[in-house]
Image 1 (cartoon, rainbow, N blue to C red):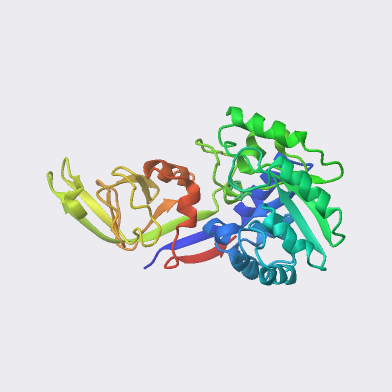
Image 2 (cartoon, rainbow, N blue to C red):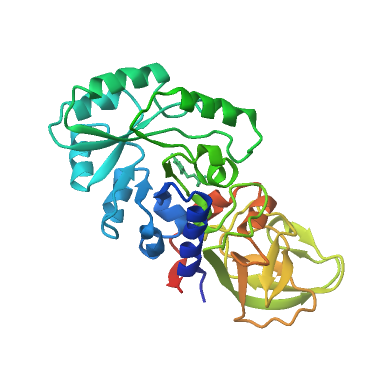
Length: 348
Ligand SMILES: *Cc1c(COP(=O)(O)O)cnc(C)c1O
């Protein structure tokens, strides 16, 4: 009796193929940071059919290296010699997003592949265009450094009509990058801004079958299905309330199924009354507050027995986007928030 996150291998392969179909000319850098967006690095083998993989930090690269021989792009880059040496031992490509990183790699004599990250308007990480020029000039004097790619990141790609997208794209196109690969597209730009595909695309959320937009994308297949056991079924009367704070009150006689999942498993505590839960192929609704280990669901007269399993997200009838909308968050946060108490299993 526990929560299970079932990870579909065929859905991963399918979604990677959607990327290939959308951007047939580009090489694919699969984003597997944050333990593969919460899907567990050891359960996402089909993604290692891409060309590169990327993680945020060295601790993730260390684990990832046990599962693939692909080049690993280290998005944070390195901040001192110790990190540099470990990153190179792990055969990482290094993102260089700040000039302070340049002197560290220039002083090294080892062969280093870098991805230069340029700030085209998001103002989070990245070199300004003038810093990029200085960087390129200095790297000319560092024969150990090979520039693999110049990259930038969109702030608003999930709104394809947003004016910032073209402003950023124009800034990126101004850079003289003759002979150097370019990369700009995350999932939203892969799907919505074909003029931003360039040489390498960087899909994240879409690989896991979740739309980067506010709407659901039928081409993608959800990879994670989260399910939990029904622990109790009881009848209640009109006027009876359910859960902490008596946060929901029955308008009529009904039945309540109590399910063994809560915010300690990663089910969002902010899910509102009425959030759908799929039980025996029927959508039911959350009744009352999410507890640490339990939720309660109004099942009316649906045939439900103790031991049946409820699906919380990751089904055609119940996409994670719907749960995100009911909890004022995004699929990314829900996926990366599934906790270590949950059993992860890979299946075909
Ligand atoms: C995480 C990340 C991506 C992927 O973004 P999605 O919206 O998940 O597709 C792309 N590029 C960079 C630099 C990232 O950090």
